[in-house]
Structure formats: C-alpha cells, structure tokens
Length: 151
Image (cartoon, rainbow, N blue to C red; front, side, top):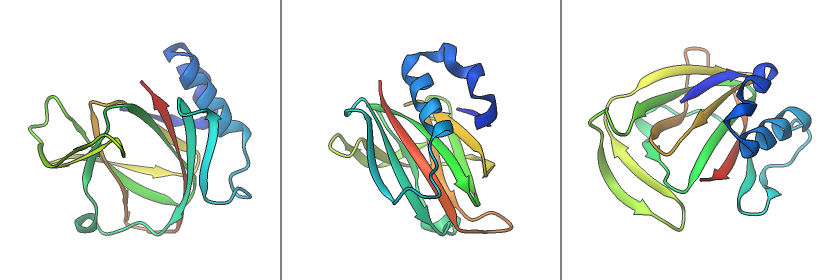
C-alpha cells in the first residue's frame, strides 16, 4: 500500500503508464461537479468509480481484497479511516470466497489504520487487503474516487 497526496503524484509515474494515466485523471478532473457513477478511462483496463457516502462504523465494514485490479482510492472531500493488512503476512482468513465477476473476496483479521483526508490517495495492489469507508474521530461525508486498473 502506498499513500500520498495528489500534489506529489509525479513521484509515482515510474510505477507504470497505467498508474500515471490514473493519477493524471484524478488531478485533472473536477469531481465536485461529477455525478456518482462509473467513468471509462481506458475501457475495462482503467475506469473510475465516483462515490459519495457517510463513513460507517468499523463493525459495519469488511476487509476486502481484489485479484484482477489495483485500486487507487482518492479522497475528494471529507475524511475516513482505511484499514490495511498484507494478505501474505497478516494471517487474515477468507470469510467469503473470491467472486471473479465482482473481483472481490472478503476477509477477517487485524489491520492497521490510516486516516485519509482531502487530496490524499492510496494505491492498493492485489496483496493489499483493505477496509475502506470507516468513520474517523471527526466524521464527515466523503466524496471518493476509486480508480480500478487491470493487472
């Protein structure tokens, strides 16, 4: 998992052209005016999901992982906690089998917490289990964009 600020995005361009394309899309789009929904960037290889929601209690969220896509989660406004656990080292156990149609599997286990706020993004690879959308100590409504990048 990598966390940073969108203003520091150029540091991550060396990670590949798809990462650069996604980060430039995030930096160059006014998401305050963009309706929620799915937006194609490069077909099914790179697309964006614009979301608006109230963060939930930790007990109402689950640790999740993906196999076919990298996530870049970007906070446009608001704040939330995101839990992180390394799939290979954390000892997390699968509690709902992988669904290839939705590219998601759910897990149970411990995680570390990171507070994400306006202008922050995180890059999550398939080995990075994550638990997004959790209320922080000063909860607020969140506008988030999740970029999905096919691996």
